[in-house]
Amino acid sequence: MRALRTVAVACVAIGALTACSSSGSGGSTDAKTGGDASQSAPAAGKGGAKLPPKEALLASAAVMEKAGSAKLAVKGGEADDDGTVDYVWKDPASFLMTGTEDGKEIKALVVGGQMYVGVTPDMAAVAKGKKWVSLDASDGSAEDGNETASLNAMVQVMNPAIQLAAAAPTATLAGTETVSGQSTTHYRSEMKAEDLVSKMKLDGALKPKVLAEIKKDGDTVVVELWINDKGELVQQSVTGSSPKAGDKPETITYSGLGTVKATPAPAAGEVLKLSDLMQQMQ
Image 1: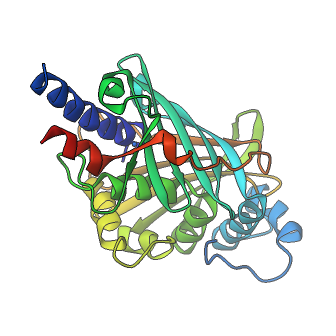
Image 2: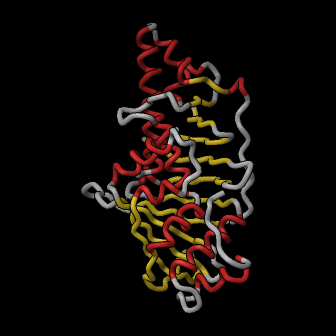
Image 3: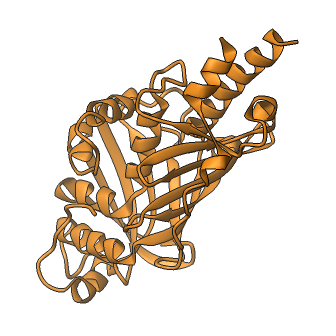
């Protein structure tokens, strides 16, 4: 699953719709640990000496759940897969991703249970001053189906507490490494896609759609996790069991834990519904 590519597909799809229109008229986990997380977590990053892998990941999940927010740097196999995210996973939660596609800035925002894709220059003529296009569960805005499922999967996979809790039961120690200037312990976990989705905070009707999205890369999810001496997740990478030829793991690096503020929902006057956009084409 490629995070920025998901947003780009939504932007391109919506942009294609607006282009057609213009020519026709002349984007809390259930992890629990015993005891106080702040006391047990430091052992998670010390070469696994004090905690075995499963307990180390659960302790880290508690630390990240408490932190509640972070700045994410997303790096994929290609330049257009790179981007940044302001992510707040505690209430009130928000997820603001920024990247580029063909040299143009693209944005996706998830807040208050609603998803938005930023208006690009290609959409400007139809958007008429609006800054965001809203998506809902009934909008199929890409050739592969429902983009809301893709965005939901992306948001949930990047939630460190969810990912750590899901990866914990099958985690193994992979060594120690320096990542982003920090001494970390490296863990690896292979899990069934169903086990990952079971940890996600999703409405029941959306779970099968998200599962189908994740399974596009295979039935098994392979996660690499790097945890520092404080029990903080510094970096993760995710691949499927059936990657396409030439695919490289998507790497997500976490910084500024607990410092990111929630992004507010855009004002109603700044939003164009995708359904309204499609009506304008008729």
